[in-house]
Image 1 (cartoon, rainbow, N blue to C red):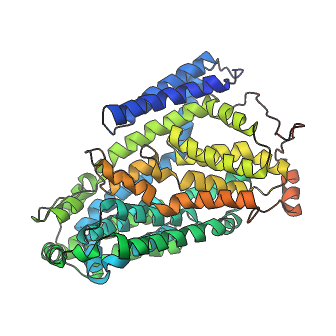
Image 2 (image 1 turned 45 degrees about the vertical axis):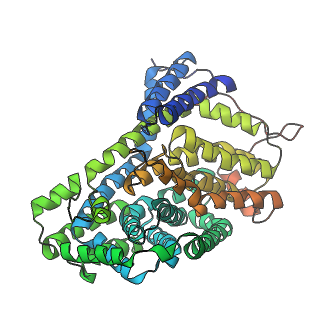
Image 3 (image 1 turned 180 degrees about the horizontal axis):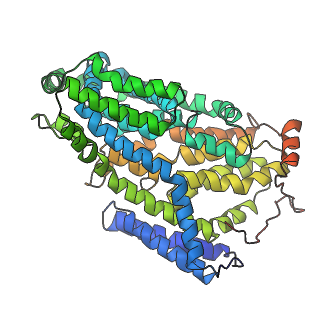
Amino acid sequence: MKKTDYETPSFALALTPIVLTLFILGTQIFYFGVFEPHIPLAIGLAITSIVGIKLGLQWDDIKKGIFHVIHVALPSVSVLIIVGMIIGVWIASGTVPSIIYYGLKILSPEIFLPSAMVICALISVSLGTSWGSIGTVGLALMGIGEGFDIPMYWTAGAVVSGAFFGDKISPLSDTTNLAPAVTGTDVFSHIKNMMPTTIPAMLIALVIYLLVGFFVIDTQSVSFEQVEGITSALNENFYISGWVLLPTVVVMGLAIKQYPPIPSLFAGVVVGGATAMILQGQSLQSIFDYANNGYSISTGIQEIDSLLNRGGIQSMMWTISLILIALGYGGALEKTGCLKSIINKIKSKVTSFAGIQTAAVGTAFATNIVAGDPYLSVALPGRMYSPVYRGMGYSTLNLSRAIEEGGTLMSPLIPWNAGGAFVISTLGLGIVDGNLENLLYIPLAFACWTAPLIGIFYAFTGLFSPKATDKEKERWASSNEAVSEFNDDGTPKINDAPVER
């Protein structure tokens, strides 16, 4: 028998599974010194389930919530699998080696970081996926940075800044479509309303990377003999030509024609495999092996070998398993009402537009931390805060921007989040192997964390914070959208009744 009349957890009880999970996670990472968040998150899922049962939920209800969130995010897991295939096959085809080769020949160390950010942003806007951009061009840019002797964390910061910002404003992106969908706006109005934070954040990051290239990184110490050694080794082991860039042209062309990301990326695998067979002399069996297990080469040059020995579906399994566990944990937190209870507590303290805008950004960011899922960090605050914005008379475009910036942009900066785990594994930052200094990419991804701060500044000053238009209010009424009522002290009234999720 299905039970739906369960209790809503108190604020203290709702915090319990989150605090315990973060304590276990901290013990694993900082005390044991092992960056493997899987088991702490699995234990957190179990603790949350126990809380749900205490509240009156049946296990089948909790399981339904867990697998619902996992199901919603399965398309992104599919992208991960295909990106793994692309990495292995595009290295074998000479595509990635050629991008590295030409990059080392054309770019200079001084302008490399801003160039990396802009390139990744353009690719990500075209593909509609930050993960696809990072796994292809981003990986090649890591190789170019290695050739210029630029620290990995600087290159990774620039790559992440460009890739996730491009994803944020691409109409092909899933999160760019999810944010307006859950707040009741349209995608193009949403993208337009993000420009006041997007453009300044990108310009700030661009200026910082330029200054770093000219004044911080010691470009005078770059050994051009080493660069020449890398390019010569690439030339000896691969057929370097503009023709091997055909897979990237195909993927970009399909994206421009607005084909969905998954078939577009898979077409890149097929074309990359054909290129490897025709131009690099690879066999069909080898292509299958590279797609599944990754590419392998021994050139005798450590920089090349460490970069090109990667890829394949199996290389993504660590990340995929972490994502699935994190998604399950987030689904359990949502189903048990823990996240709702915490958000309601925050809402009960808010009396101004600046406060609700700050709370929306913070809630999306906090959901990213505790649930490890960028989709939940966009969807949950979007659903929970929309009635408050309507009641205050503000356009929900403000909310869609807030959750996109606290959700999409902050996900790669949290190592155990789906976005962060992908960045760390795909760019070969070696955090699991103890190279914790490469976590510096987090503060160095300037475009990601400056945008939310700019948005909060606008909320306090009233700049670029649109009120609801008459047309928007009419749409709320015709769609029977929820509109919050307010207490005498200006705080929104909270409905704590259990809902079927």
